[in-house]
Length: 420
Image 1 (cartoon, rainbow, N blue to C red):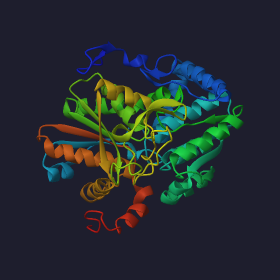
Image 2 (image 1 turned 90 degrees about the horizontal axis):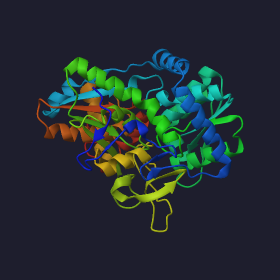
Image 3 (image 1 turned 90 degrees about the vertical axis):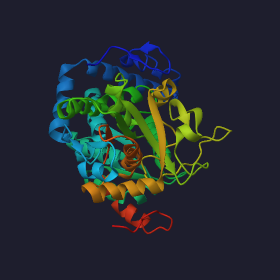
């Protein structure tokens, strides 16, 4: 049963998790809204519309129907028996968000925000994307509702995720490549925000993760809470109890916070987010914000950021296009401080090995983002006993990454690269 408050061993203090963020959009010292004046009005408009929609049974009914009939919820909770037997430790369950329409959890949030845009009378949608999964989810819902759609994507990510670029365009979206900076997600967000400033009257920006200015972090989390709600019900039905540990990859952090949120008050369940360790923890070689970052403000939000002593954003790297963002969602920073969610990091080589392992043992191709969570989960399973249970959020499928992985598997220095 869900209790009203959470007491953490780290602080021995209680709070109502549903009160976060506060009215100013803060999770303790994190979050907020640091934007130019031209964006203050559309953000207030969006916040007001969302607060009204949360209390509107008709909105909730339509969203629920779309999640079931268009997206394909509920997703399965899958016992990976062969993989568990091979590793020889804890039982491993996978929450199969990869089975959703468009191939990842991103459709949950895209549908919710599209319905809000319709409610606000917007006719045009913009979005940013890194791995392309948020882009194809947005393009798909725009096709479904008849919105004009523009997706911003870094040129390097367009190269790595060419299949998703084609899928977006097939769905009627205009995909605009961004050549600035590192040509990845941060630059795509910059361009999307410039577009929004110019076109606020008719345009809604479907931000793809639980970050950015208020109300996005809390709103995106709420649209993804369905992941954890389903997981809790499914475990009670299948195992008669909750898992011992839950693990999810963390870029901006939307899949993880949606997965974890309904377990925050379950003190016996260990929650672990996994960042991108990249090639090494040297500056510019990774995207592990809690390893090399510090407090700062980026793209509307105060949180942990990879930056140099002068406050300039550091280059990032990850084998996965969706985990190489320089900042982490503010709610993650809040729970890290309280000791409720732990954070680890996994390097490129281990993520690639986990991609190959799940594919060969269970016939399931995970996204490279998800592979970081899988790799850490495999390590943890070996350390636990057979009567313990780990659940890993399989946040997306790996079709989009298959050709990039094939290229990387030929690269010297990748362990076991050429094994089948």
